[in-house]
Length: 399
Picture (cartoon, rainbow, N blue to C red):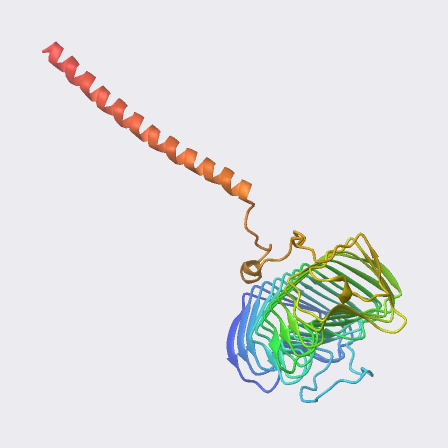
């Protein structure tokens, strides 16, 4: 009958146990587990695994590297199976997972969820966390998650790989999927499809950046049966054999606006599947595509205030166009997003270079301080010498 367990400032390496380091099974009352300021590397099996337990697990400010069967695994302990069906019998009831300011490097999985695998019936929150070179042979190179509520804030996914969902695979969320301020780069694979696969009634995407992705399928898939909000998205230097962005089945669209597609290479840049959509203030720059959009039967598209770098014929004739410009040389929108350097260095905050004006002011202040200090040293030396000369003169006069 466990209550609360906290692990802090623990460092372990090269553990080849046949089971997880910490494992929770059926527990008769809620359990809280908290990991803080620790480091683990070269584990054969997960550091933490939970199966059908009422657990609240919190991981913060720690590093996990070189795990061969996921670093965190909640809700399913059968490691060696190829696929998970839609009938999820191994939910962890009332379990939730919180991951904050963590670093996962070179974590792998034989099937799903290279760094984190979670099936739960409550929520999963992941904030300010770095995933680098994580991989899964099947789904979810960094994260495989079947959870009703999922939230990602300022996460960094670099060099992750999987068959589907090189960064995140999140099917069948019952309520919502949100990701804000996330950065994804350098996902490549000749047999890989999508960096993010998200399927939820409500999806909100804000201030995300996906760059330097080369996949055999598409790049980003968002499927929602109710509400979709997408704004301040930057898709840059991505290559796909199908489409860059797929939007599917939304019934209510809040806003899809103020986004950039820069240097994207695919037959279709945006695919609209089974819903009516209004896209505002999208900037297409240095595009290499057959068509900007592809509409499924029954879908309608309205474009307002968009800038296209190629001719109007690459937009469906059925689309309604309001204040749009074609063959435009308009620059991309100046959007704030997570910078790559911040992905590697951030702890509590993401890093971004100061603005030029701030750099100039700081430079002037520093230069002024140095010049002032130099002048003070010169004045001090002059006064010291003058005092010595005056003293010598007084001695001579007295003699």
